[in-house]
Image 1 (tube, rainbow, N blue to C red):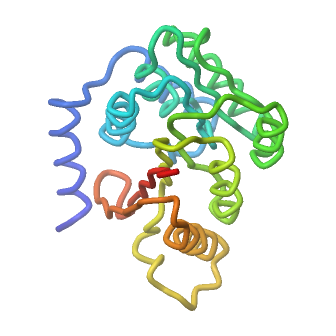
Image 2: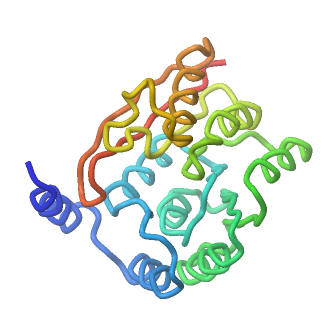
Length: 222
């Protein structure tokens, strides 16, 4: 199969199951205009995050890595009226674009974008004794994934769901000898998940308009 074929299938699924709307379209448009990298989730991936949050009955969501807020909109739309989403972003320009996109989507009252290195923001949440999150979406710098997992476990409860994005890296994740910091970070992240008796997890390979990659899912058991 070719990238062109993957793109065609994604277009078909998007048109049927994850159609664009004004807020989502504008979020991508303004992210591109601001020069943000083209690394946001696809529409079907965003819809999957939305469905996972709905299935989870998530009232509190933590996102590590905001970018332009496209995935944040999908997740935020799954929240109940009294729900809360906190998204962590290190880049002030990205955060500003995301805040504007979230406001236009009508989610400013339910979402907060915190600007600082994610590990600093996570330490602050722990220090604040933040109420546990029902869902955590990890989609930031991959070398720090093991540290993000450690903090996520401090900020969740039994029954919470932890999602890790981009864990396949075009198949390079299978290379045990890789010196790529992102590969090493994700491999350690997955190893820590597998070693933790309090987690039940899997990982799924995906193809689509963003190429060949995948995600991990881990449930906190107790």
